[in-house]
Image: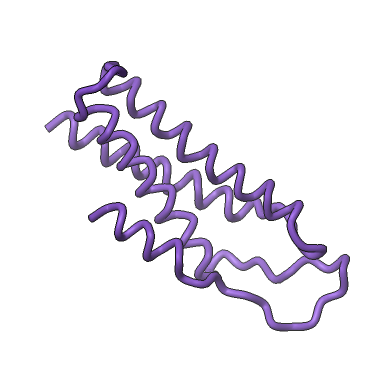
Length: 121
């Protein structure tokens, strides 16, 4: 179910600024844009899903819950950082959005909090 929700959220189109821009103009990057919530939800779901897999699946990797949460946070935040670096290199008008990265971090922290409440219960 988590994977299905993740696929739906990531497939939704991000908000785009339809104004014509020159090559050197930054696109409009607001805190209330729909893509910010996509960043938050993707990071949240990625953290919770990877943390659950690391904690509950019987496999080669067995570690304490706290370590699993930190590994999950690192995986999730790495994906957010990679996406922003790719955005900067893509298209002439691409740029690194610190606001997107803040929302990635917020989703990652919310995911770590959810994992800690699940594991402590």
